Amino acid sequence: MDIISFLIFLAIGALVGWLAGNIVKGKGFGVIGNIIVGIIGSVLGGFLFGLVGITAGGLLGSIIMATIGAVILLYLISLIKKA
Image (tube, rainbow, N blue to C red; front, side, top):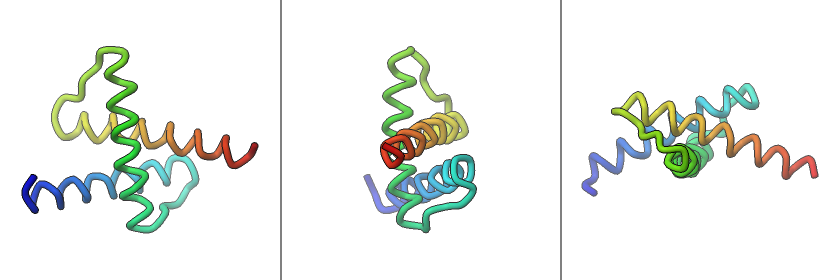
């Protein structure tokens, strides 16, 4: 992975984390928090969508899949915090 791909990866992670933060809590988590949530959500979304046989098509599909994964991640975190 070259530096440009890595920067794009981090930018998409930040975007996805910000989107998920706005959907679930109504605010973001800061740049580093958004990147972490976005990256973990991307992995979770890819895993869950892969289980049902759905693959992301292009950049927009990847962003949607990662956002859904990040929203699920934040929901699970909120359930754990309440317990």
